Image (cartoon, rainbow, N blue to C red; front, side, top):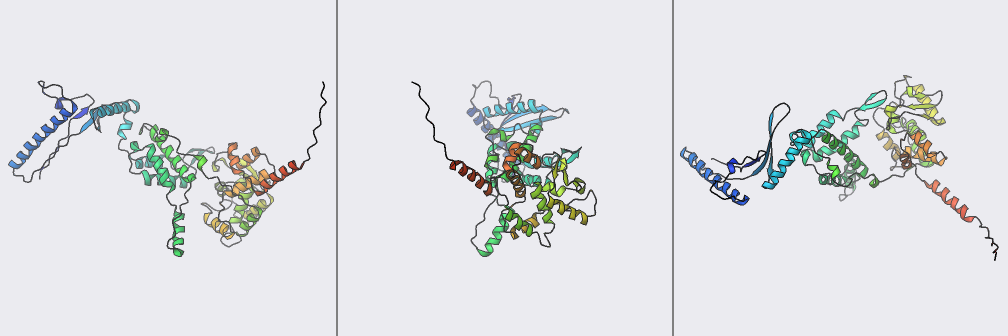
Length: 447
């Protein structure tokens, strides 16, 4: 069975039209007439080809005619290698526009964008993982390469790859990114699926409750924006799609938590640590509440950073989020807890104070549930510390330094008006309103 397909004349950068020229005796043809003529010529070639195949013994010969218009530009790269860039076009006007686009890419990016025309998002993700997504490297206490929190960064990239993986990088649009945000917010988390599975055991009609937060999706979009900025710098895309419309990352839409522990809740949480599998958690929680240190800072703390003689803790710059070293003072109960830990330890300066490398998620979840505080997160202990300092009339500027904030606005986010604060405010207003106002004295009027 034979098949013959003829494609219409290509539009080259040199505007070579020899194959499509009408005879000199004919008048100038419009596009429709030229198209009709090409189809007629192709039909003739098809018939002649089928006839030749049949003479050679072929049977059931069939053919088809297709006419297509292309924009084609030839260029030579820096190594002297010849390349042809071809783009399908709808009309001759469209072909001319595509030729201009190709020539502009050659002039602006030296052909990099053209060479990357078949590049997918998965290719960009691999480049990002190979060159950027790696453990942080430090020089003189400063991060010079890689990322500090590798696991959440990789999780964000994995989510992006699942959605955009096979998509052509240069075809990625603002609308598609906006669609990702909408779809991702409806995507259930592993915890949602596990909770739904347990609910189905009691209720076969239980519905899946999605709890993925805007904050999580914003972190993923921030990672995507950075990846596309890299692609733009490399010349693989002309511009970042994020710049084509209004901001897709709105921190104002994130739900701000206002959860701090009362003294009673703190007592219950610490009591829940009096369990064989949770004893290691007690000194960590006390350190978090009494110093406001981040979880990563606590777990990275080593004995060489602890001055038990002067009750001081030195937080190294490369263990902090803001890459700034700071010094904290211990409370009496924290000093007692750390001294007990030190006596039980091998007393090696390089050893981790709390002996934990990864995280305390499982033990903390068990402790908060046992204490009847399922809504408390580990980071809320830091909020609690900051709010207590403000309640003790410590200036916000000093609270910010204790927490390791580089911007004052960040400190404001951590300071929450709890019930006690609200009652003090109302009491102050009651006292003000209760004051007897002195009767106004009439002034003498001079006529």
